[in-house]
Figure (spheres, rainbow, N blue to C red):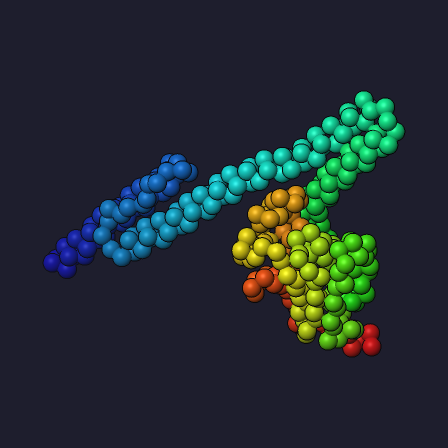
Length: 302
């Protein structure tokens, strides 16, 4: 009889605990269902025991992570809006300049001065075209649906073609870029069009902001573009690849601040890392291609 009473008491206690546990779980579930997304409310526990405490802690850690992500996303949206406003200004400036020169040309009777105004308008439109081209390139580089045609590509011939295309700009400055390859047969698996864009942007960056001809060096799986800069104190190497980032000296020379962001995005799409360092007045940007592919392709083609 005593045993039966004890068993009954235990069963009753178990039932009570089960009901209490169920109520606590329902309370926790109701908290999650009714909690507003922007609320700072955190889950608490009314039942003793490490299980409920651990569950509440895990839920709160998840909520904290979600809140941090929400704040980060909001900060990125605000920064993006500021960037768009800046880009809009950068595009509007040459457009308004071109419109002004066209108006002057329309009112000018002297053919020589009219031609001068039209040439200036064309130059401003060229600046705007360059901005739009970089914006399109950035959008394409970050489009997850873009399929890159990866195949073995000789790096030196692609680089040589890019440098040849910029020959007039180098000649105008009296610069002669130095190209030093430890392996002239250096070959990588890449989308050639993307690789051309990467090299074009790096060379254009050196031409626009450099103070001397670039030195381009290949060692192993690394390709480094280095050149002296006029105002190294204005450059933050850790931010060079950010969207719309421009150093103080770069702002005075125009540009959208997308060239190196395009480089970083395309490099990532090709499983290539890109980094920048500043040694005194020398800025060096290094591309590091996957080390397991480079010389394999070189040997296959040899």
